[in-house]
Amino acid sequence: MGQAEVAYIEVGGRSIAYRLRQGDAPTLVFLPGHASDMEGAKALALDAFAEAKGRAFLRLDYSGTGSSEGRFEDGTLDRWLDEVVAAIDRLTDGPLFVIGSSMGGWLALHLAARRPDRVQALVGLAAAPDFTDWGLQRDGGGITPAFRESGQMLLLLKDEIAVDCPVRLIHGDADNDVPLDIAFRTMRALRSADVQVTIIKDGGHRLSEPHEIDTILRIVSDLLEPAP
Image (tube, rainbow, N blue to C red):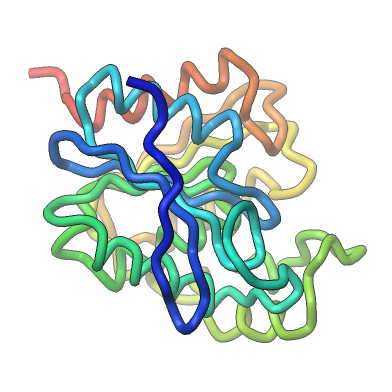
């Protein structure tokens, strides 16, 4: 069947690119990391997984990234979160399984808190909540003052994270961008009683090696179709 075609929605006057594969609920949603897009290795692997399973799958490019309009330097966490919320509200119905990579994991946690009736499970891939606070990319890395300010307004780890759905956090112990301790801090902050952390030995930040992607797909599959 191949990939779904790139389509666009308008959010706040910005044209946001997305690909939506039709299929059964729950809809899988992939949120890329900072300065990444919906065409990366993990997104493509999840798309192939969704096709094989007959599941609906939504992925998108934040404004200023990938195929979306705008300037990357104008991007802020609250702007991109608004785009994510608009996309799932306007393009999907019913339950969602959200998979967020790095910064996308931060957005996924906010999405689950904002749409608790819809987000049934969340998978964080080297999730990086609060990275404007604990110092990811101290040497810049495209983090503008406006982005940093917006991040500080959306911190999660200092209080209980009001998410009750099952959460799976996958993290490499050799991640040089997001310390492994962030996964444990996230686990402790989550209100959900069903949280598991999977540590991949020698895994870096991208988690895009074949065995790492296999782990991701296995965990997503187990959430979708739990063993009796």
